[in-house]
Image: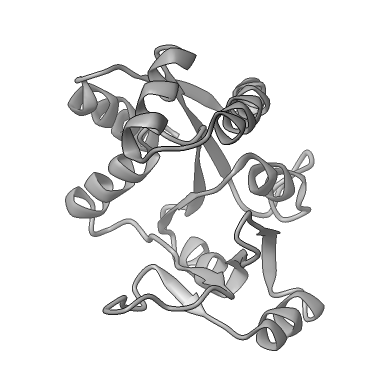
Length: 194
C-alpha cells in the first residue's frame, strides 16, 4: 500500500489558499480534506462539511484528551483546531490529507512528535503559497471589504511574520496574478512528487 501523508497549505491572508483548496477538492476526490473543529457559531444554511461545531466545553475536552494536533484562538474569540481523528486514520489508510493551516498551526504540527524527528511516524509536506508582492496582498485585502488603517497596519505586520515562515516549508509556490491554473498545476505536481 502506498504510504499516506499530510500536506499543509500555508500562506498569508489574501494569497489564494482557499481558491486553491476549492479547486483541489473538485479535481481530486481521492484526497482527504479534513474538517476543522471550531467553537464559533454555525452560520445560517452552513453545513458540516468544513467544520465540526463544538461547545467550549467539548473543545476543552478534546485538548485535555490530546485529540487535537494544534489549535488557536482567532481574532473573533472562537477557537479552531485540527482533529487527529480527521487526519491520522486517513494517512494510515494510504491517503493524501490536505489541510490549510496558519503559521502557528504549521509550527505546532511540524514540531509534533508524529511528524518530526529523524524517523517521523507520518510524512509531512508543507507548501507555502507566496504572493508576487506585498502590494498584491494589500490590494486583495482592501478589495474584499473596507478596513481601517489600523487594521490594515495590523494585517501587514501579520503578513510579514507569515512570509518569514516560508523558509521552513518543504517548498514555496508563487501564485501569480491571473495565473491560478499554473499555480494549481505546480501544487498538483508537488503532491505527486512527494
